[in-house]
Amino acid sequence: MKFGALQRRVKRCEQVMAVRLGETQDHWNVLSQVWRQGWSPLRIVVVGLAGGFIAGKLEVPGKVNGARWLQMVGSVSSLFASAQAAFASVVAAQAAETADDAADQVDEAAGPPSAAAARPAARPVAEPELREPRPAEAATEMSER
Image 1 (spheres, rainbow, N blue to C red):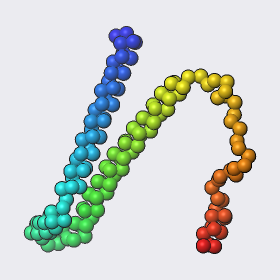
Image 2 (cartoon, rainbow, N blue to C red; image 1 turned 90 degrees about the vertical axis):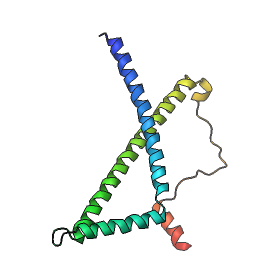
Image 3 (tube, rainbow, N blue to C red; image 1 turned 90 degrees about the horizontal axis):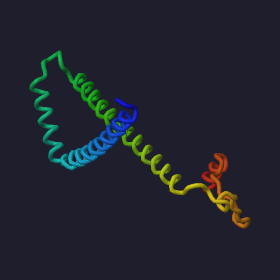
Image 4 (cartoon, helix red, strand yellow; image 1 turned 180 degrees about the vertical axis):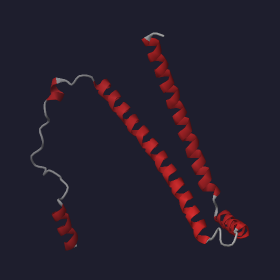
């Protein structure tokens, strides 16, 4: 296969992947919204009671005690938290990439800078320069209030 054909193939695969990633994020957003809306207070109570009943019936004395159940619940909750963090990092990476692409498009659309734009703009003398207060200044202001 020729190099140009390989480049077109890779570009096409990247486009397909970008579309699929967008679809996956859309589906994930819909799923998370429906999941949150589905958990009404009544359903939470019913699931808690049913889970407690099942845990009480399945518990074999001495083998599965309350500490084991708490450990399992903690493990599952950390699993969900890490999955949410991974998804958030993927979304953040895509947002950063989109911002980079937009910045590149703006730079391309702007073209080469003109002579007037190359000159630095004169700052007005009457306005003081706004800056963040240093930590000591901020602490003093806070303590005086």
